[in-house]
Length: 497
Image (cartoon, rainbow, N blue to C red; front, side, top):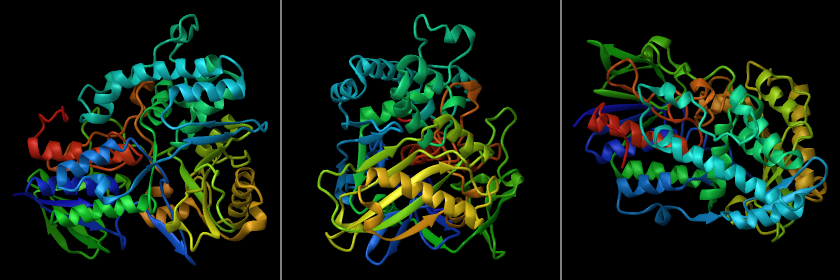
């Protein structure tokens, strides 16, 4: 039985802790804050409740596997999963709209033909069919296996070239070029907006990012009753069942090294914690660079250029209409300019906004009220000064105006609002600038990959959204299986079969 110290109590870190504990190890989690979940937090006020991080779960199989492998009760006995149908309502800048069903290729084709003209649905399905080829080519090495030493092979573009387009003869296409050439016009935004929502700029992201909307349409969008925070609670409780120990208010200063390998932690209060293995489940930039060494030729750490999120919580009087869509995306009239704003800090472009309206009594004081969450991708603290009242006021108004398109009579129903900026995200999670890591994407020479789970320091491993295979609930959750496999089975571990 090994002593294992885990830094941080985010979703990837807890998934790792639970898997290692069930393998018979003594696991202790050291969390700087007062609670678990990392970015998957909760804001409550006057009977209203809001998720501070992701509001929906995609690829729930990751957490189903976690619960199967770590205990007797499956995921569905610990939380109530509900398929969101329709999956998403799109409101475009010109006033047109399209509401896509959940997990229905034929249904999506019919909706798009009605919204954008005959043939639009076929073009959409053709693009996602090519995205499926990219998914099949990269699923295991990009999601289900530890990052290979020959990771540069994932730098090749897996998205099949459209015959006659000429794009791959010149260079691999970007996601934005695929959207424009293969979909065109208003339909292009339906492919670009979910990629931007993951924190990736469509004009600078390879076509392989089409796997993200493909995953959503194929595996569906799911809501957890009580909010995604309830999923974090279920993972935390599974850790406790497996005898994982949590130390809250225990900030880590650095990783201790003895005889050339990780030997424990130095806490902020000066206490030393011995360990046989250390798992870093936080943004590695929070630790001294020498604490998290990477081997020569490794994937560089993600960080510079990673955007954040700004979120507005709205407490409304009046009941939620029964036919309201759970998720509405209100499109920016200039998505390319918006993407530049999110990465460069030019904050004049109207943002693409996601509006979540869950039909969940746990989010509101009673049936005569409604809780609405509005969010957008934005530049992190440090690129913009989120202590500037003028800046925060401008963003709050932009989010409120966009939400008004999705929620009729919004301003008349508004009781109060609460804005959460990247500076708030940084304080809550410790992530530098409040940056929110995107999932790894193949292509672009490997520029959009994350560092491997094994580091150059023996005994030190990386979990969570800042390590392979990247951010998002599903990807961060997968780090638990990868890190536990590397520790339990050794460097020869190649992922579950």
